[in-house]
Length: 581
Image 1 (cartoon, helix red, strand yellow):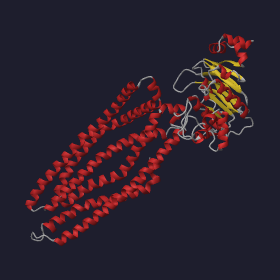
Image 2: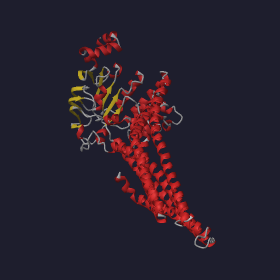
Image 3: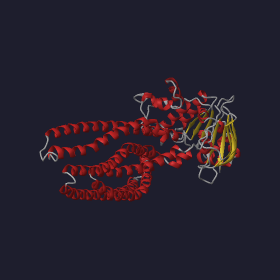
Image 4: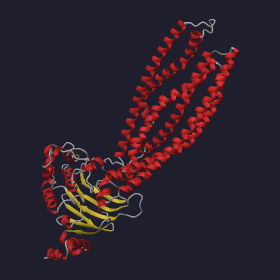
């Protein structure tokens, strides 16, 4: 944490100095009030005759001290917020930067809900912890020990009374904090669960409504929220027990001081003003202890949250960057050399011993039954995952040797799920190429068969897309995602079942247009429909994680039973006979 604190240490130091000034003004005032009562009102040293001049003089001093203390308090708040907010800002930005480097397995390990909680709630807790530490720690300890010191200064007996009660109060606090500390970690994990559930249900609200699962989801969310509230209440009950106990102890101390003070006044060892000052210092001490309780509560929560934030900051990316800048003579060639792949945390291989070469400008389709490893195969090309064994080469260079930004600059994938952002249609397309001109954006949309429906919208390419593309149909979202890939003009285009929502006529026009506008790009098409893959230069059939066959549509109909079964299930045997004829 020091890495972040030291950047804004001057603000923290200034905040601390102003806090010292504020507390010192608070500690001086009871002594002045004592003199006003004894000398100005009661005239203890003047035969019982009060002195208005003393009251006015000391009263003006008190007003000036109060004003100065208020100024110090205000400046303390300013610098505390400047340090705390800036430190929180730096931590949050560093966390987000680190998350952007995470591999897919790392993202799965943390979970989206947990990452959201850590970057929002946990960093806020850390931010509050720093602010409370800078402000509260100084104020609390100065008030506590300053009050005890002044108690001894005005009357030794009063100081001893407070000092005897102090260990009991601290012991009570330590006991309660020890009970509450384990609950803070549990509380944050339960908050993770609530946030994850909230995100899942909001994202899947259409499915929930379609399956009439609203009541069951309310119950499931209610249970998770009840657990969160139960833990929160457990923490609050602990502190609800602690506060009255400490208050009771301090009131006992106050009563003892009053009793001893009365005897001291009777014996001439103290004055009424002294007793009043002692009571005020006792009140300040109580205030300091109450603040200490809250301070330690915030510190405990802040340290738990900091531990969770550190897990992000200290997580090294699984995929180490190479040094190759991607400049090669050949462009668009892909090689799989005896590639095997197993997902992290599992034992069953998804792909085994894949040997495959895809040449520049070639259109290759990948087919196979659900779960045979089609998406896993294409995810190895942009290095979303690393192979378990073997090697994937792009233009003759192992993908592990590339800088990831340069490697992915060569590739334009269109994923199974169309991801759009709450920006305009034009901005969503230009994600593929931020520097793209409006003409390039339009040309990409035309190639992707998206220009027609875009032109029919009220604002065209300036039409704002709703969150997660909810304002668009499935086919429209897929075409915008394809346009985003096309505008990139990459060496390699990967379509991972990304035309499933398009009708066959639109799909055919898309691939014809793509072949005209991007003839030199290597195209990999993962699909389930025969109509989608039949015109590819080659079709790769995967089965049980391996290559079952590779060839043209006609060749596979003759030689590959798996492909023939898929064809018959979609087209029928009559269609097969017509193909052969």
